[in-house]
Image (cartoon, rainbow, N blue to C red; front, side, top):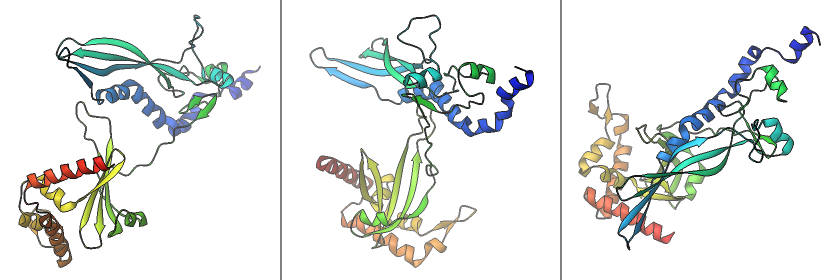
Length: 316
């Protein structure tokens, strides 16, 4: 085969740099999960504690030190036991790696006992840091029965190529006004308007799992509002006035002033567009709802929220 013919079969990898950008975020996300994400996930799993009344001891179980291995042929103990994607396509199997993690046993405050366990197989993304195709040039890819321009960014499951489709989420920690007809179906008196915010867990030393919770503030026909949040697959609706008084020990006049005031660039409060008569009337309705429930202090509101949650949990 002539040199010209070889170049046409195996073009330079640099010709596909623009195409690599299409899947770069997929591969980088998987690399983060393999290098750090699994560890963060296990750090955020609360330990399971088991109390033995016979011995008056408490056993604490937790997970740590996860390691994801490269795909290997488990049934054959050969020198070259690497499992390649083309073999998975032909054999209709999955391109996976073994997930190993430590289970930590601790009795009371004694030393931690660690034991490694096999948690099964986890799919490996092609061209990721755990893929055998990582760093292969076009000639190497062709020798491994892949396309010379193989980009990766997908999985091979049961011999079929699968792509994990990223979901488009609402911007984190940003309130957004929303109009939906389904809001009316929540309860009697609800309108089609609400303010929705996706609250993202803040970055801390041990809490970086990017978990989020969507909170909705529903507008009612009588001028009041309800705060909706989900716990264990069920939405709980709480009058917004109770939530405001539960945050801090304050009095109704201060809440009314805060709701009907606006801040200038110099952080000075004053009457403005938000301090109109309409908003003032709505603020009075919100505060009157709390008084009608005989809730006057912060402790009263916190106790009411706790009792409401426990009652709703028992009824579910």
